[in-house]
Image 1 (spheres, helix red, strand yellow):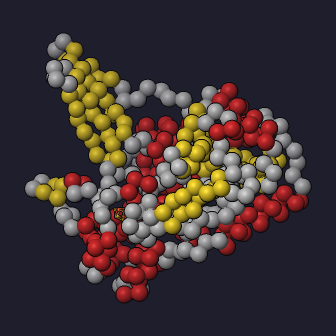
Image 2 (cartoon, rainbow, N blue to C red):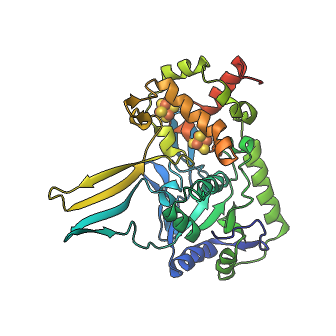
Image 3 (cartoon, protein in one colour):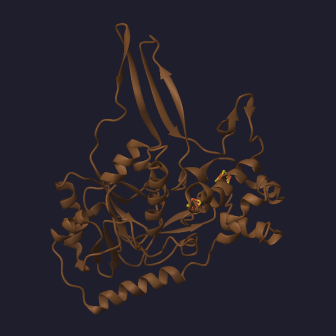
Length: 376
Ligand code: SF4
Ligand code: SF4
């Protein structure tokens, strides 16, 4: 695993040309550069070729079950909140071939799972997303269940954080302790200032190496003050909060009547699990061709909201939608702590935005707390 510490280099200022040079330098070093761009009515994370691809002047508004792109009154390139899908889809792809087997004489020839891929550089990783990447790295780095593909992709990736200068309506990372300041887990950190200027520092050897190759200038005190003001605003903006103490006790209330209440609203669509940057569940599927000479095993994202997900011998054990919602939120916020030593929620708010009926994870915890959790 790469060492991405919190010991940072002295900050420098990159201007528009410096940001452009960052992208071209990364490409010259062989990185596939992925960053924000506008597409399909949203800011998404996708391959970018240069700064012209960045979503200049675009923001977003997010509410429960609601997302719209908006025009900003400036030309900030990182002025949106979060893309619908995080970086998970690059590090933990939605569909992956695990191996292929071909009949070869009397035996089987096995093809390797994945050809070598170019290392990826992620441009625009928010603090909550750094926390989500660190959580998944812990899950896939587990000594008993290590995922070599994930470890390879994560180890090779260069993470360029961009701190939030404001918070979205659904953000609650301040209450989960995962933002809004990017404090660790990045290679390079940027803070966007007015006039297409960026305060930049690096926290790893390769981050420092890249930053040293870029045209830059020394910041003045006003730049440092502006960055600090943005951090304060992103924290002060957050009106939503997760009661983490009550959330940790969800495992004590499996019979709570709130599970029936949420079942009346939840469609079991699984959107929340697809957009969540820490959900990691998968299923496997074997496919063969008509000759029977060739077979492949694919791994793909699965969701605890599907009936099949809880299938064991004889049938599914979570036939009620309330039981599936309880499984998801209790694992995410409560039993994840027993399993991995930390909550599985980084407060990004995506599950609220992309829930078609606007179910709000923070409100469900508050309602259960109000009705009483054991010891709470
Ligand atoms: S549970 Fe919701 S708010 Fe928490 S990390 Fe997942 S998508 Fe983000
Ligand atoms: S909570 Fe919302 S997003 Fe999640 S499965 Fe239910 S309806 Fe879909």
